[in-house]
Image (cartoon, rainbow, N blue to C red; front, top):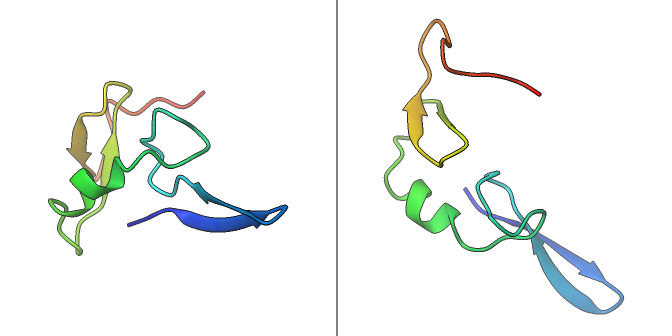
Length: 65
């Protein structure tokens, strides 16, 4: 639901935890828009365009690289 805070050489950085940041590996705040609208008891995935999909028993549109 949020980024991972890390300290590097006295500087604070936030690493993306949702996988949707356009500034990978750093957080750009995208999780703020997704986390508010997701239901806690459901599992979601996001396609390459950032569209949210709810996971079902099968995953016809998921691809892995």
